[in-house]
Length: 318
Image 1: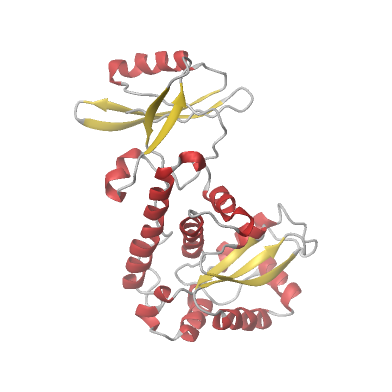
Image 2: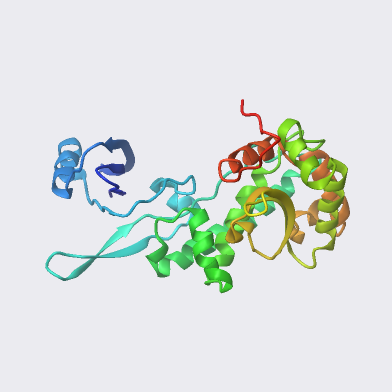
């Protein structure tokens, strides 16, 4: 099987991924980047020169598809039980034929060992939260996309915004948003986290909230006052050009309002029940004191300044 994603913008093929059948094995080939326009027959000629008759199929898409770390290789399909999408292409003679494409979103691994946040967040909690709940959102999303591949090729950001549909969500929204929220959540923590932010991020928090302690009280208060399940966020508001604390219910993600998230905290009960039972206050306090990654938050704020002119203070870039 060959999985090929050819994206043309101006005069360029962006990426070509080749999987060749060699005996009973399946092997992922190299990635080429072409700086000239190459028509499909020419591409197939090159592939046949390399693999001979072992090349089974090539599929090209002539719409720009941004790269995303959510896309993973075909040899993981069995492990994650990912469905194959069927994309119907129109032939030159007017008829249609189906070409099977392995196209799916994969489960991203947290950026630390699963026991690295202990004793504040146990491996048992992460095994269940990431390994079961997060995985279920991924698999549920892929099953939904299998029914209609109109959203094929979107980054996760694009998928969340498209399926939100201006406040009238499509069925795919909840799973897509929960995948985005959880990916962001795992990266919002680090071993040895907590304490206080430093340098430019601290200055921006003090500018927008008066002091870090005021910010902390408001963030904790928002988390404890959220009714039911959802998330609390520190976001950068594009229009107001300032940091704000935002609460969202269920799967809602602030990127649908064009906010730039800086950190988030999962307030669904499964995020803390095994470690803290019903004590949400203790869970939130531990997150602020020992888990939140201000290093990652500072990088996200620096990125946000590419879109929002915050004026002084300037965020230092190493």
